[in-house]
Amino acid sequence: MFAASIITLFPEVFPGTLGVSLIGKALREGAWSLETINLRDFGAGAHRNVDDTPAGGGAGMVLRADTTAAAIDSVARNGRPLIYLSPRGEQLSQPMVQQWAAGPGLIVLCGRFEGLDERVIEARGLREVAVGQAVLAGGEAAALVLLEACVRLLPGVLGNEASIVEESFSDGLLEHPHYTRPRLWEGMSIPDVLFSGDPARIEAWRKAERERITRARRAKD
Image (tube, rainbow, N blue to C red):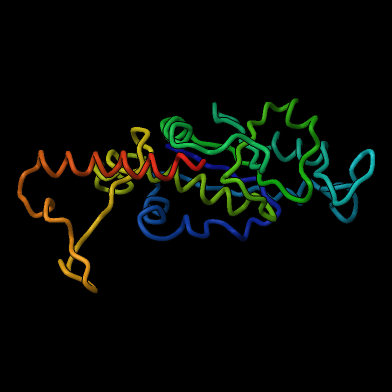
């Protein structure tokens, strides 16, 4: 079973969107599991401090090595990768998600403040991952995105396996346009080929559209 452990200063964020729709149903039925570890429980001193000023000076605060490492070490690895959500990390991709979804699960550390003491990243072998190219206040929202991307690939979660095979990024191309009723809406009509009844023509049109959209939108990246 895919098991997710989230180390965070804000455990109340979870399950959040992971607790609704088909993914939430799968969680309630035990198809995957989710636990949160409160980083504050491992804080130092009477005030349970988890951060301190950056060595060498500078703005903001940095997550401490000792407290963060203690939180990480409290979680049984069980062969699961350690992921640190950070804007400087490698960009999350569908191949990464597919690999993780096929494994035993993930341990995810949600970043906060200016970042994490580099020694923890090196000593615990954390893999830094970014969700998009924007800076968030913390890693919690990114964790929701990452886990949803993984869990939706688990067998039986979505129900229709074909919808996963045909979607964006599954073969390196973005998804083709979709249409439904009414056939004519605000002067715009659904392409006639989709009513041809010819599966080969429809598939060829969809493939051409996927290639066109990928060229147009990914050429800007």
